Length: 305
Image (spheres, one colour):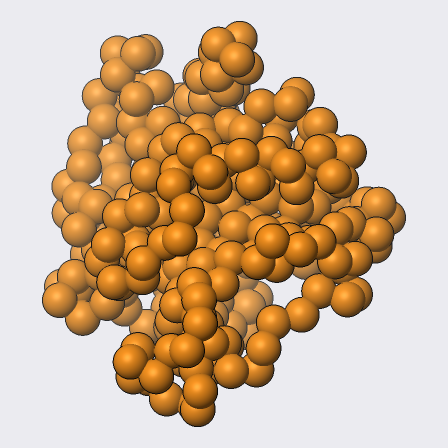
């Protein structure tokens, strides 16, 4: 059984979900994209994911804004407006009769190539838009048991190589990092930046707590996570000092608490890194407080419609 921040509770309703592909809906097993799609051929695409809670797409504007920045960065010309994309997502949810406990992933690729190639000038149609909605709740065992991390030898690159803020289809380096962690007996990978400072995890953002201070990386070498920013906002609300700075594995091993953040699972405690137990005598007081504060932010979103 998979244990980690992406461990989801099985839901049989997902066998019959309708997936959106360029204006049409297809039953899960019938949803297809061309083998000449640029995302499939060379990882030339961008994506986002949001949660549907009690009929509300939580923090949807933040996610769509990040998608638009990614499109500008990659030179993908979107054929719809932000409002139109939001309306499309809502229509897909309506067609699937989905109202709560749903995870929606929407992906945009440059389009179809006339022949396998990196060259964007060989794109003959597009962009392609795919929306996958699933009844998907995080397994509570990850929060109650916490997760184990292993520090990968694979580094997070600098912005002039492949900007870590870019939520793109090219995730092979993160997959390789995760494979190392799994083979080492951990659940997920901790990744360092090019200077050897702690950066992030393979698919989540990483925080530590020491002497009542919350610490996360500078943000230069990690995904500009929506949930990461919300946790920083919660720290401000609760008058908890939060530093965005360089820190090393020395600091991680000596931390009182550690946790990761992401859209799907929210905030998940980390119980060990590289075999070192984190906060042996800690009750994760600050992590628990931040988890509650994050829940309050979501409730405010729901109340504001």
